[in-house]
Figure (cartoon, rainbow over the protein chains, first blue to last red):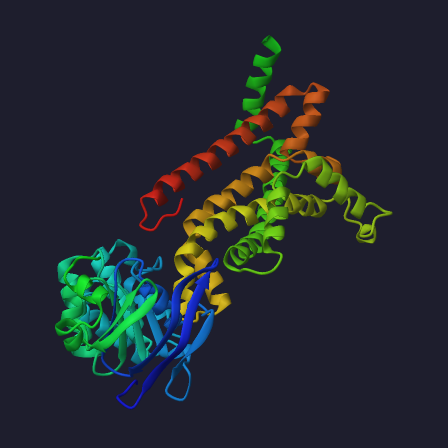
Length: 233
Length: 237
């Protein structure tokens, strides 16, 4: 599990594609616990940054280190904005990501589904779930792999309010204390509800990194002030 | 016109009274089609799934060649297989020419690219949706290929049916390598060609009716499955 002793160091991380720089040389040092919200306008580079942390994209330069060595991909789980649901039952979707299915893991899968309000649908074709239910399933599926770091790319975009509430409540009450969460959103209010710290990205550059309280009460950059006041989105 | 009507009535008689010669030809046709499609599916579906979900240096070239092979002229395939399996050919020592086995081989060469390319098209769209998920959870290549096949099983049924349709109606290749030998390599299509040239229209028509009915039933089944799967959540066809 990630803990307070853990440090995530992002060293000179950048990402270019077809001659265009989508993330400029980023240097950050983050705590290994709590919820870090990546905030920024559409197209700012939040998802690129998250995918670089996940290992889904290879950086053009720089690296990410987790405490003393390279971050093992086994310790991370990624949930994208578009839920990826396999053509099978809800329970089988949960168990799919496990290398070995044990009775303990099966029990855990059922418990996680119950926490996500999907316990009565475990034998249902997962493709018939609503958008919010699918996203809850994706989150539960990520948790069952017991990741040290959970990376969530706008998991509550385009889903029902009750699913958003359930996911937020679950993250704050059950997940935050035991693992590091990176959460991408451009919803200011959601960031206020969830964030321990904010990484604000503008035009592919991390221009502000501070505690959530500091960020919202005393933003240091003009872009952050404009974003908080809703002048850019 | 009268001759045709008589032949038609006579052909119906052959079908209704289960003429032995007619049955023998039909069963051999189905047997060859079954094995040709089975082998093509066993090889073509995993190959198509692998190509759709894997990027390697000459992938596009391999895919282009396979797509080009979908339009292989059957007579050219027949000639190619004939040359290989003829007495002076590289595999002539096997003595397979003019046997049902070599007819199956020729048909596999014709059907395999079709099964492979149709599978490729179906699984490529699924790969677009799944690959990031598989990468983020480090799903093993074999498991991901199996998942692509399992998750597109409904669509792949229509691929197999398309293979059956192509196989059972093929004549150019199998007449060259099979030789259309009575009781040994005579199948519906080759028999129709022969009996028509001999003027034996009742048997030719009887076989034609069976062939047509098979094609209609297969296509009807494909349409039925398509309609059924379009209603299935997550359908990609």
